[in-house]
Length: 244
Image (cartoon, rainbow, N blue to C red; front, side, top):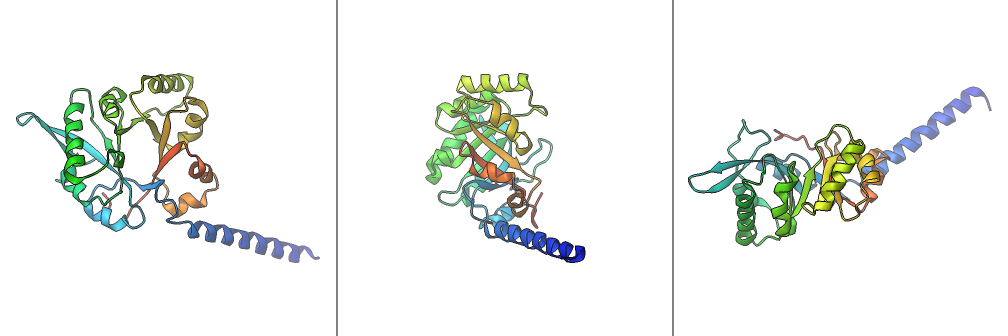
């Protein structure tokens, strides 16, 4: 066989392998609806746009306190200085039976967690929801303790750029408190946290927010994440017509 033919057959084989890999990834789109959730769904329009592919989704919440009425408003926004005029009271009415929502609450604290608990309980009672339809996430694990005690699924937002021995010790200490059910972190930190947080009762949530679902499925490393039973949810990038 000539060198030219060898190169031709090698290129054809590689090309065919790539096509098979892409085809396999495409065929798996939509197969992981319980595990792959939509990231940053901050409008009802975006919710409708991605609902068929992602029945479960994550939304950012900033708490606005109404001291006169002694209640809180869950404002659907990522930043305290920005509002889109959409509250979660309006949003919750569009949550279908069995669909789940991850609430990334930016400013949950021990000073407002009781009012947030009352708000969540009102959703459960008014709309006939289950507490297991919510994931409540915060950077303040102590503020989550009250929600955990009241049977909500809670997650401590791991806000550390570097996962070193000191960080792992902190996470193990958090796990021992029983304040939360899970740790949530970017997928780039998955291996470091998965391999070093040994408390088996602590579950994991992550986000691959730079990848669309097809990009995520094309990456062979991500098969490990999909098959890890300790990792419960992976947030996926969704940038459609109504992204904000």
